[in-house]
Length: 499
Image (cartoon, rainbow, N blue to C red; front, side):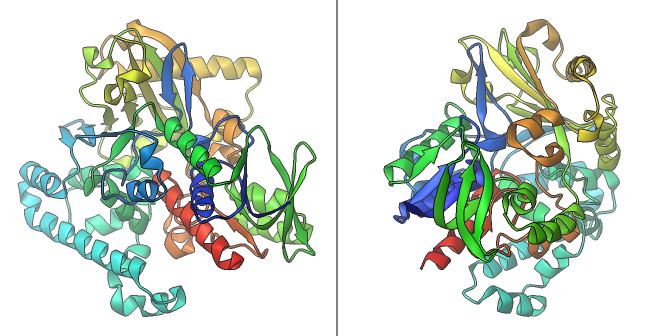
């Protein structure tokens, strides 16, 4: 049997591509090496506690949001229950502690009240945001071919060109001189893995809009329910899904076009198109059966900067975290106003000066924990190099040392936390690499630097006819929303070829 499309990997990009193709009647086969869907974003359970492995929040998931619209279009909203969020997060700095909602006017008013001397600059900055969003929408919705759209961009979409050539730190400083205010405005960098002076302004603003201009939601039962519902819908549409099945090779016809895939069980499946949600590096250097082409890709991809990794702690608590200070479902902790300093502190494992992300999903959905109990996820950034060469004994010892350090830091904001822990799990960059085969445990694929964002992002098209990429390593980038967009875009490329 020949499939219209084989999808390698049931991460968000692979699932969304499979969902769209199967809805349109295409014969698809989804192959996933793990026993469950979701990739980085899956859920897991321990002793009655359900944890999100990576997701803290997903933008554009409220009514009218892009992700919500995609799910509704493909009947997924009938299979799951959404829990609408009231606030985005509590954000803490040494001299500022406030709650951000999903209203940009409220955010602007808050900033003006805290920094009245910057009022004029703030209004100009938010006006610039609005201009960018309008031009980005026109660019995205333009019926013109992409090549022509790009040619006219300097004249028709100057703000897109403007943000494509600078960091978000540079962009904001054009309007704001106060360093503390600059830090607060760019606080969302933590969702993209690079401090403001390194992070693409283009990508930052797209994500910023998703959280500060639109409401979002959670999925009752955890995001694993969403991904399972997508697998079910693919099956109801006639598609097939196989788990615990890893792809080892992509077979081509003389290196020109896709022919089939070979699994770790030695099975061969033929397809007209292939969409890989596996990481782009393995796909293009290990999977394809053309050594010369793989060598060229290896040289190109090795020169690209990989994103940061992370250290996460998953805690099951004997009572709700609100009892000892978790006032909102998400708290962003900043030890200072220089994001580069807190980022670098995390990478060198200086936990007294690094950023912290505290998330309590059970506050949104009590069904995730046993009755009367609670949960908490503690996250900060990390480097694979910090863990790569440790032997098993030293690895285990260092892991527990980091756990203790981060819990101690968290207790500055949640006093008594360590006395209420029933379940404890932790994930290092080595964990990230092992479970989802992400090189060096990179959690966002390639970094969203200026040189690797927007049209500079790795293309979803490849040198092999019929082979396309999806997921955080490729356009438009990392994050759940971006991976949904990536999956739909890859499906559109496959459809164009199939037609």
